[in-house]
Image (cartoon, rainbow, N blue to C red; front, side, top):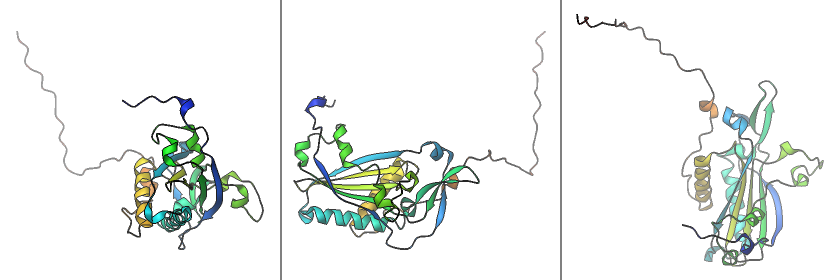
Length: 239
């Protein structure tokens, strides 16, 4: 059994300061297209936020090195995961949500905490302060620098925040729309992101055709072979 924690004993403020926010774009030109979303995705239109902690590493002692490496890996992974750089849109003909793969970019945030990881305490136990390690929405001035318009539909489908700690460790907070991943595909995305960061090939090629999840009529079997119809045989009466 896990130990009980007094909420008052948990850090309520991780003293996180955001140093930089920007959009990250695919390193190569991607195909402009739309991605079909299933009926489930039409309903589960909300953001999922996760935080992943990493201890200090001798090869990445400076926070800038960590942030640049993750940013570079994100830009590269947006090529096979082109839908992550897209935006949700409503198809006026079908009245259904779709992902517009328009290469508008994913969000990227660099932040710094005044604490060390061991000062935070239990990293597994839920702590409301961990919300400071995830960016839920990008500033509209970054999304629309020319016009400054504030449009919710311009929000990225994926925002990745790298927060470094004074011990050299860091946290990677990801906020993504549920329409982009389910649990298993998100795990594969993390594996692929790690592979790209290590200059290795993808662990698995993402399968992006959602039409296999479309609702449809039950398939009917039409057989031309001779069919047999059995008749019910009643046992003789016992008289």
